[in-house]
Image (cartoon, rainbow, N blue to C red):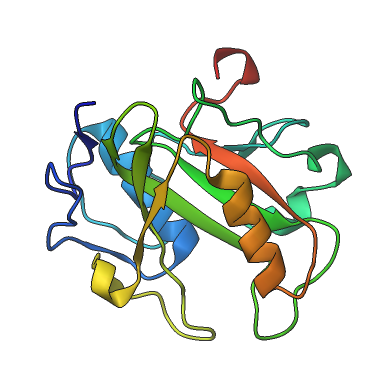
Length: 194
């Protein structure tokens, strides 16, 4: 299987010395937008940048994360169904995933949501490896620009044709068993074309 990679990665999936916001949502959105604009642009917090990025669950209407200020409050019971990933529908380069604690609130030292963007897809068709952003914002701090670096654990690799439910389950366990749902991040606004 040929390598598919983002501007921010080399062909082998190693992140280049590229700076992204140290917030999972801001970084995922920026990485997706850079891919679709086919070029790097300066990131500015709060800037209205296109294309917009949408969050799709297995039910409910897509949520525009580019313009929505309080995503967690926008998500309701109508979205309480995992997006159905498969060998034919996976988060491609220029897309990503998000997990959300829809039903409750995570303990104080944990998060209710997490966003990751696909940086590269390597390996074989039957056993691909997905290299994804994995940034975590430091609570009560201003968003700063940081380098993507696997050694700093802000890049993570998932192996297998459909590792997403295992990631969701891992996130649930870390967050004291709260029920999380997983969604797809994409620039496509309508469910029909996904």
